[in-house]
Length: 167
Image 1 (tube, helix red, strand yellow):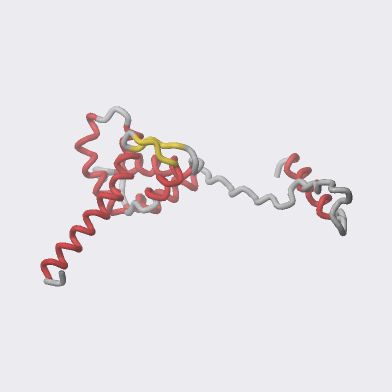
Image 2: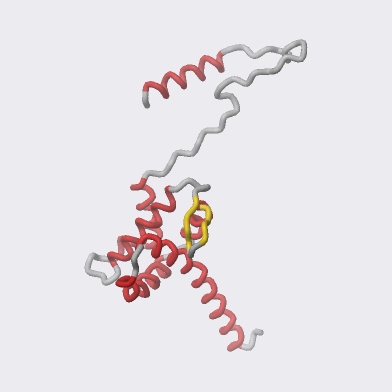
């Protein structure tokens, strides 16, 4: 803990030790709020190591060896996901030419599964030689995959229902 944090905490402890007045100030005076009273603590920001570990665990990155054809693409995907997870929720990210809030993009990327990441990596292997901005391309590709996957699952489910005569 830094010296400034210790002194700030010490001041807060002193504030809480003071006695509070029994009644509001007389003559229409304003109550003064005490520093630190009613403040909600800010959530601790995730470190890059924590963010990348979260992304690697999410898509099962450690199950691939370095010789796997998509190892490099999957590694880059983890880094892109980690970067989004670390951004402030109100920051903007451009996806498919549209500015979106980082918090929303992080929520969507949190839905990426190992199967989705592997499918997208296989698709991207052929497309990568023509890509000029890899980070933006990967970010958009992962974001879009979540919606494509849900749509494909819904279509497959509907087809099964039709084939079974349930619809």
